[in-house]
Length: 307
Ligand code: ZN
Image (cartoon, rainbow, N blue to C red; front, side):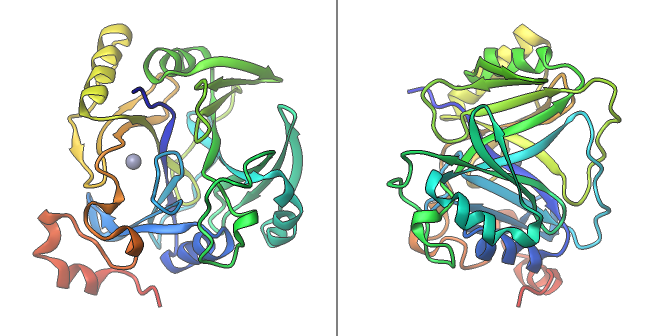
């Protein structure tokens, strides 16, 4: 079975405690994994998602206390959009008033735009008929209003066509609609994370990575074989070369820079977040990859205080 769409989005935060509060309390997401940045174990890596940490629901952060603010521009993921039930629009408009929430309409749908405490651009889209989908409701947000995974992301690009070709040829998307300067690509039949909007805004300054900006966008591959097939097609059809595969414990990944300069990752659906702690206790303890377990005491002592 082919599984396509967004796997996760990874962004840069400042203060770790503030990030944890905002995503688990204000937005009501589940912390599905508390680990460290495998390439920089002095920093946390937080994963937020639905109850099981399903692909298509996962927003992750590297909180770096002293990271300089990012600058919006071309060649980056501009906005991450979550799904909420249509009837929850009023609830979220009130709840996000301190985040400067703005209501707008896109492609005929009601959208609430706001920012997280580090300035990361987020939005909620109200959708009919999704109230009955399961939701994580162990926080302050009742199930009837809770976020149900990703709706879409938008990329800000100099030119949409080269990136669109990668979405179509490698990741199973098809051009679905256009509104103004935004071209919508969609995976047919995929509810979670099945949309990528490309905003072509030639002439803007390039983005500068930092606090409040997105580090990379990961797409799903069902397993290693599907991932390697995507790698092969990227090289053969587009002359794009990926990194070697990296074991991220909860998925296995390759990375490449797409033609519009956004860092793309391909991440396997397997093995998932219950590989090293029970599903009912996801996110409750600091989990470390095996190669860092021997340094646990030093790592725990160096990580920022979350209390
Ligand atoms: Zn990633």
